Every structure is written in C-alpha cells, then in structure tokens.
Image (cartoon, rainbow, N blue to C red; front, side, top):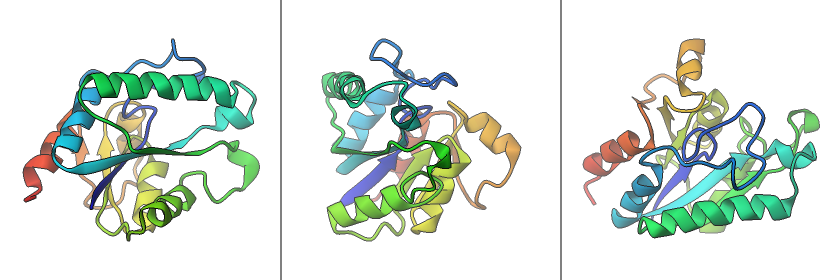
Length: 181
C-alpha cells in the first residue's frame, strides 16, 4: 500500500492566522485538489494529519469542522480524487497532548489504522512541526513554501535533506515522477 500524509492548512488550503472557522473561509490553494487526484491516480492513499486547536479554543464546533471537510472532500472528488481519512488534534497548544504536532501521535494513529510502518512515507507540510512529527516516525518530510512554508525555511531547523517545493502540485509532480510504481 502506498500512503501519503498531508497537512491541511497551508498545504491543501490557504491558511489564516485567525484560523479557518467556516466553509466559506476554506479556500483551496491553486492546483492542490488536482494534485490530490494525481496522487490517487498514482496509487496513493491520501490521509490528512492536522492540528485543529480552534476546536479546543471554542472558535468553531465539530459540526462546522465537518462542513469544512465536506467542502474539501467535494472539491477533491470533483477533481477526480479522494482523501481516505482525516486525523486531527483538537487540543490547544498548551494542552500537552500527544496528538498535537510536532508530537507524533497523529502519525502513530495513522500507522495503527493502516497497519503499516510509516518509514519512508511522504509527509507534506508547511510548518516545522509537520516535518518534526514526520521525522519522529521515520516518514519522509517534504516542505512546501505555501502557508507558513517560506517562514519555516527561513527560520531554520528544517531536517537535513528535506525536499522543498513551491506548493503541493509541484511536490506531487516530483513524488509521482520519482515513484517507480
């Protein structure tokens, strides 16, 4: 089974320092939904691992988050793709949970759900915490410059050897070209 893990905000959709709190605020980054479809066509299962502390902060409720994700699923579906699962951490940053990236709890949950080792699994994110969580489980961190990506790169600490791409579409092109299967 081929698997790829994507962060949501800043990778699939435009990010906001004020959080994405409604379906109207959720706007895909150009080419991202088509890139997910290309991953599916290349035989990948696509899962999302996302910190959603806005839930824990009371900025939106689970029903609203479900509507946001329904919009994302619909747009990806219209492009001919699918997201197989969404794993999320609802806790605020100060909760000390194991699931909030940079901790690897979401990645452990993914490994358990799919009964697989995540060694070498591509994990595409825009923040250092995405890359750190991926590296902790032996996944292959990939950075995109969208969202917080440019700031992440400038801030240092990016794991050595991490490939950097302009956006999800470019990362997927590189991934699918280098994939022999």
